[in-house]
Amino acid sequence: MEYENIKSTDNLVIYPAISIVAPHGKNIALGLKTIEVRSWIPDQLPLKNVLLIENHRYLLEDGDEGFGQIVAMVDFDDVHEWREDELEIACGSDWKAGYWAWTISNVRPIQSIEKVAAKRKIYTLSFELGFEF
Image 1 (cartoon, rainbow, N blue to C red):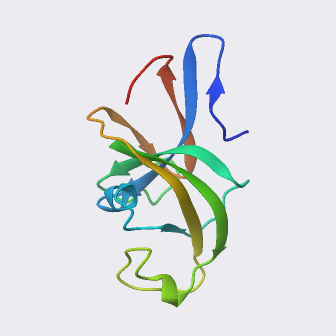
Image 2 (cartoon, rainbow, N blue to C red):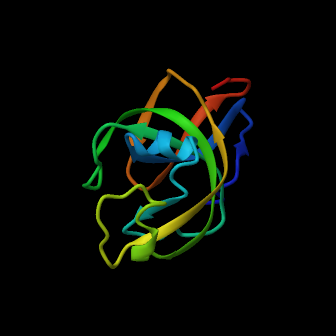
């Protein structure tokens, strides 16, 4: 799957999305958090125009879902092993080896009150052409 914006023939725009637990989505939107730490690596890089969905609980098991709000659109350019000296830029409270730091760039904050799906891993959200966040 390509992780660029895809315009389909039925007037939909499809965006890649990733869920993040509050308050870290807003921390990214404000420029306070410049890496996202995950236990897994995306299938491809870079990931462009990814919607950040801030929700209020960890989605730990396959199939876990919830709802959240769109807080930003970002790009992920690079992934590297998370280092202990990156704890502050991850807005983390403790460091553990074996995790991956996703470098965040091109942050575009979005203020939306719409509730959207929050899922595990990278997933897609569809919007009608012309929908404004």
